[in-house]
Each structure stands twice: as C-alpha cells, then as structure tokens.
Length: 111
Image (tube, rainbow, N blue to C red):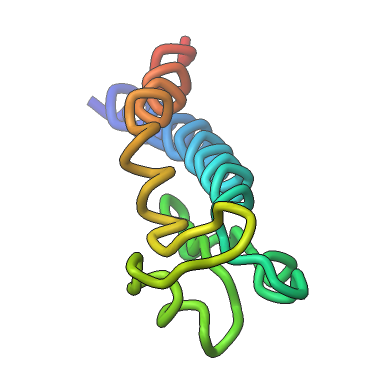
C-alpha cells in the first residue's frame, strides 16, 4: 500500500502541476479577450490588466484601477470604440467550452 500511496501522491502532484498551467492559460486568454472590450480612453485601464497566481489552482485576473469594478458593473454606460461594461465576465461566459477544453487537455495528457 505504500507504493500505491506514493503513486497516488505523484499523480496528484502531476495533475496539480498540469491543471495549474492550464488555469494560467485560461487566465491569459481571459485577459487577452477582455482587452478588446475593456473601456479604453487613455489606455490606463487596459494596461493595468493582470493574471496572477492565487494558490496552486487559482488565478486573479482583472484590471487594477480604482474605477475598474464600477465600469465593469455598469453595462448601460456608453464607451467609445464599441467598448463596454462586463468586459471580464462576458469573455469568460462566451468561451467556457474553450476553457474547459484547456483543463480537459491538461488532465487527459497525464500518463
């Protein structure tokens, strides 16, 4: 049973590593897609975008300006160049199948 426990521990470690990479890839893609929607006047909000680790299997993806959340939560605001509110959640919801595929590929690639 010791070898079984060691095997499970190695599998778990490998899975966390690969899934962590996939989650990072999801974060990068959310940031890339949202950059086409985030309000853009001077470009300061868009350039504050970040995808940072938050533990082994979590990421913080967002924009780091005091007004970012307010602009995100008001889709009724009219922005120039076709930009809009909900600039983070919409790319996530509209690409969920793609993001699930990243995770499935990571898990399926374990041997």
